[in-house]
Image: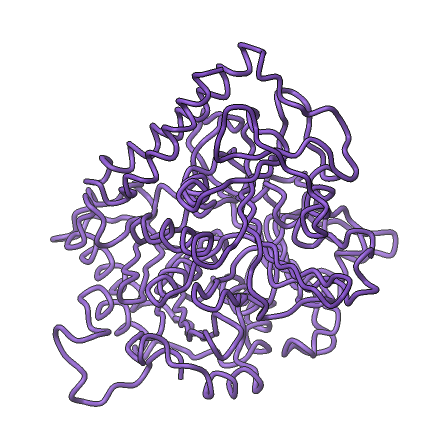
Length: 574
């Protein structure tokens, strides 16, 4: 089996793999006499359906029996309250400088104790959908939170006969030394004064997401939003994958079939709202269908084997925003559940979802695997190109990066904007640019690990690297037609790049299929050059900050900083 659940007596004890202090606190809770095992998706559905506050819509789950549900299953809606997005400020990572794990462990110990008065549900699922990489994960959550439990089992791979068999025959991860993932959650938790419990270790006064990723365990306290549980689980899987030779990817990947039997595998990286899902699922008007079409791996979470360059999806379903899918939209036929949306009665008195973010921002739904009929769980063909999706107004719609250090550090300094998927402090400028390395705010290990893995893909595996701007370029909107046309020209080998001004390691393309405006940068415009230089200097500042913040935990090699400083010097020559 891929991860380890059972231990010979001689492998149990202090200092042995799977027996850290934090993990011992969390795992023990799963064996309490107040714990009820939820073995099937049908059981989870019934629990969620009957949970107080659940809205049972009249929208059928399409082909529900193929997902382990009854044929008459309906889309369940549950609304969380005021918080409808992820809250990064609550995350505390064991092992990071400034994180007091001794105090945090006490907080979790007391939280576990308080659940003795509650019925707790224990569910299991698989993360990773191929025998090469499968992880068993466990979730413990109190009665009353059945919708989180149900959505968690929908989002990841429930234990169907097919996948249980696959797991038994799957490859051992880390020579069999990686333990199962255990996540303890109590959304009903709130801090209460208790002897020997010090809440000064929390980064948020009311919530906590505490990770011991080296031992594959976490505690999520006071957080109702399902996205915390989804991304918390992926956080564990990405960290585990990173330790075992994979590049962990928050993005989408697709394989194009081309004339002559050729393949082209493209990976796109961006935050929610960046366009990564749009690019991943785009069918390009069916222009590739005669050659075999397009295969989609996933639009949010996957890993790349840095030796073989094959890629594996971590989730079967899609956790998508509902803002762009109005009531009655054909895509809504594939909904399995919904969160933080409204409801109303149609002309036949049937309960229907009300989407489009009328109630709140970041309404969400889990869509079935069937939504993407060309979906696969693994792409064996090696990845050909990486696309960093940015919303930096100084970056033209597309640039090609030369050199592995520059290619990787531009991913490490990916500039984007905050999305409604995130809960942020009041007064935060949602349009302000911020640096989110590799579009992955869920990293729990040193940044250099990602830097080296993406650098390896470019340097040793000849993976091409591009930046695409899906925002606006100096006031001119880069429309989906532009980005899709750029992708098509690159995939089909039609793209014509040329050296960009004084930049030795950057190439630019001026024309592409479906171009909607004139995006040619005016390198003679002093205002533009100043803005471009400032954007590159911001990246230099970010990398210099990595070297000092958190005691240098995220410091990158000197070559990364040098590659960026070279861009600033070249911009200064204009």
